[in-house]
Length: 503
Image 1: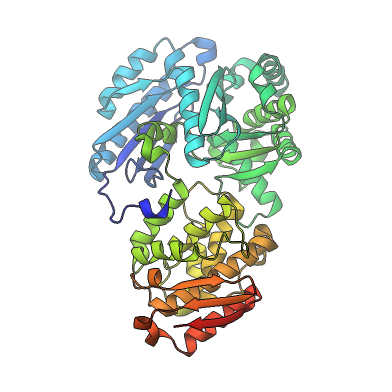
Image 2: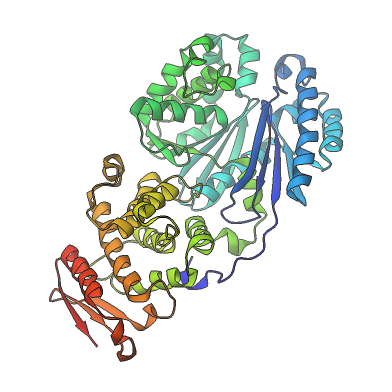
């Protein structure tokens, strides 16, 4: 999204809710609005097990029905309490396949006080793919959404969802059909996947894993490798490592999994079967990486309801701009900072590609979010906020680039108080770029005191001869001083330039 086209004032947003009635869980998520980068303000699920036994009896489990109806009544009350006016409710595999599904939906609509759309397999696959696209705009591969009753697979590329398929490989269904035998489940999975021609297009691309069962595998792998960033979205595991962890978990007993702190105890029953599905899928397709997406059907449903203009906007820039409007002294100044740094980034002396450019703009929008903290904690607080924020549209190295840039903006470039594991994951080149951008920010803030209207009048450029030239209009000449000269010198040192000022 071009920075100049960002909204200058926060548009009023009304909370919206999505209720997802799945084969295993029933969940309510209330978001802060129908936005490009929605943030959950309330999130609750109950594992009702509606689909348990459907593959054998053809009926939704009675205990599951009772639990689901009770929870839907609670969801109705919660939505009223929060002030939700729009509830989008969907039901998936179990409700559409069970003989008593229609009767359950009638009762569920009464309990929830809203209509419920029973998704076809094709619709479920489409929403899952759109959810991945909304959270990972540059996704290129196949999205797989594993639920209790089914597995949806959809090819995604260039912000478009291709044709999808639904396979009867949900974890609860496999438990029923295999009578709890992993060996028998493996035969069912292999036979089904051998007919899934879509997997032939996955080799060498990325597989985007959606669903709570698979997210638990990501948590387990993070614990295994002592990963420093506990953010599941866009967490990537290379093919060999993904097969290793999936193969390991598919061989563990339910009792042993319940003792693993990284695994949700409520998922212990289904996790070995979900891990087995992933292991066999990887064996049949050989993707480059498994990338985990916390966005799926629910977010895809909201994304589809956005106007095309908002769909096309950048979710990272939108989220960063929202942070600026909430926390910065002057959001307009942060937008000016984006344009001001355009003068010397992307030039022959300091080249950047489009990915680096959008990260720079996001960092500029986030540059002042820590100003209310005690001066000794502004860098640390900002780094924590950014590294742990719920925004999407950025991979883990990119997220840490943003966190380190704003940390250096407060603490000064080269300050190795930043966690070593963060610096390692970012890499030397991006760490250096973070230091350069932070030094430019430090100069900008002493020049402007974070007030808008100044930066657009000040020019700065890196000359071919190696000079860093700051051009100040006469009416701002009194803003110059020792501190400005020091910050200009710091930036020049990092760039390997000689600083100079022209009034």
